[in-house]
Length: 297
Image 1: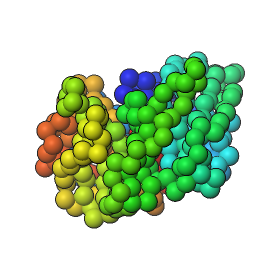
Image 2: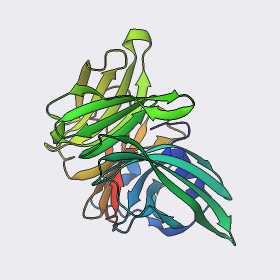
Image 3: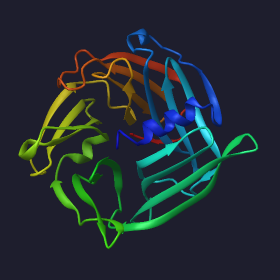
């Protein structure tokens, strides 16, 4: 995810403006010390209902929200989804995203535009254009500009975003790993670090064995992947994991995990760069009814 103009920033700008909030209320803790999650933290994720309506789930300052815009309907539910960029305020917004089609094997570039009309924010234009074939069975997408990471089957792939004759496109895939990635449930871009030959993309995710894990992928030699287990158990049920940011705690990160049955959990990692997960605090928000298919952001 592009931290500067990505999903969290866009969703925050729109949600903070009070745009088309379908449901908002205090978080409902269930046997969890949610006071350990600072009030300045916020985290959002995109979601799609079975009818193709796009939603945004959010946790901000101890409150949860579901945001939906009129006429924001893609017509199908992506098997994987990733925000590319966006900008907006309380009068209009634009956003673009990757969406892998569940049946035709194509990756689409989805563009949408919204405007406030008669006091209500609605989507005035949605377009979904085929970008690249070869995306059948895609389960997860994660961007770390100029790279797009994809999980399909047992493998992890990387594509490079390029412009050819002024047209945005993706390179051929490079298979970074060919085994073990079928056990990865969720994967999202956290940050990049280092310089030169030591530059890495850092991604975090959850596995079927319950681990919360961090992967560091060398940008120059991407088949060089190292990893650390942040938490050894308890994270298997999450079908979506998103990261956000904390205004007064820039070294920390909030984590929003969503389960398919509609419950969610929020956590706070006080030091996102130390590779240690024992200091991660937080817990369940209870059953929120968040059953629309959600994606890590």
